[in-house]
Image (tube, rainbow, N blue to C red; front, top):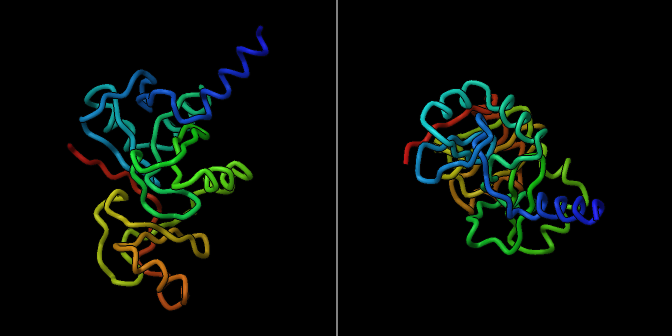
Length: 187
């Protein structure tokens, strides 16, 4: 019975169906309030003030809740196609290391499962300026997708920029590089 319970708990924790929690307090996150985007994921909170604490040290809170087996954030992109995805358009989801990932297909989910640590890795730097068009991207949720190149994540303003960068990345790489920043959005 304990083995069955442990197996059921494992499946629930990885299926993408567990409720999201506040990364600061660990209790249920409330929809519709202030959100913070960080490293391509969005986070909601239980009460005012948690967003400010989280924005000061996101990695600390994400790691604490992941260690406790809780899911705090939703990644805004299919990590296999690197394209922006909305949860209602996803064919599958999976919680991994405290983050919920959405996928355009079951095949993408299966590809992610083969090496989730690698597929969920975030480069040390990012660019929130479209490398192809040069336009500033206000938040992760405004980006159409991303491409990782030479340990930098480049976000794009529109879907047509992705193939241009993929074709000749050295032509576009190296613009507006920074360490990932927490972006607070008020709904």
